[in-house]
Length: 134
Image (cartoon, rainbow, N blue to C red; front, side, top):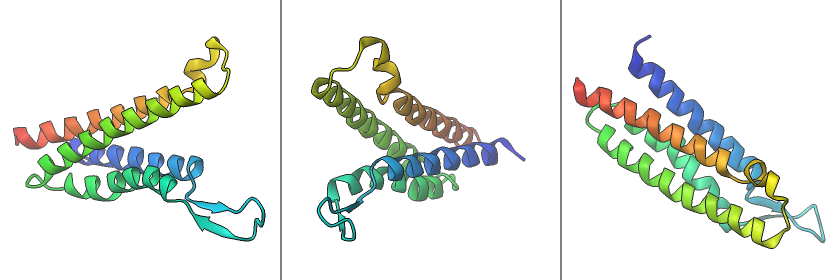
């Protein structure tokens, strides 16, 4: 298997894992607190699901061709930057609302998730660099 396919597979696996993680944490189909049988759509949680969905489907598809890899690289970078800002904001807001012991800040923050997002970006950058050299 050549390097491009390995990087593309890695990019897809990280994106689909992020999608599943976001769906588990920010499920946009919410059960009503009064009547749990009723399920409602939460648009704000759907937005946190939308970025990894775009990453999984569109960015991966755009990275399959040399002609469109520049768009994938830009879109992937924008998603990572937005994701970093949103996840950092979520952690800061969570820590401000709750009293979290200082020793647990890193473990309970979204810092590991931000690291995974940046790893996804660097895999995409490597794939982009390979396309540009050929």
